[in-house]
Amino acid sequence: MKVTSDAVHFLLSFEMDSKIDSDGGNEFKCKRFKIISLETLSLDVKYEFNSDNKRLYSGIDGAPILIEEDITL
Image 1: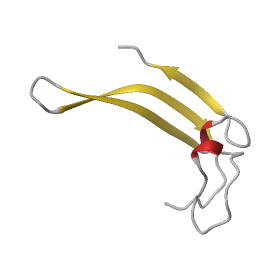
Image 2: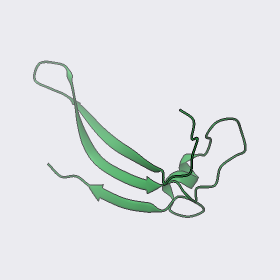
Image 3: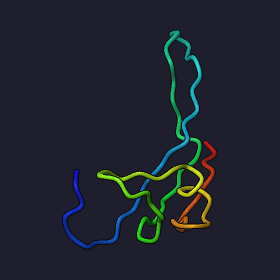
Image 4: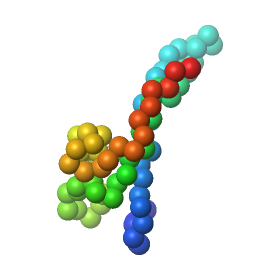
């Protein structure tokens, strides 16, 4: 999807944990999440959105991390 107008853009990312359940299938649980503002993220000039995990998740040189939580169930 192309960005066609000015707006605040956010990224929601999840860290998932998996284990084998009693039926032998995979069970996935959300371990951690982050909400990141993309308005000041530095990007490479290309025809598509392109950055890297270092710039995206560091909180330095670009995208400020707005929320980061460990989820304990």
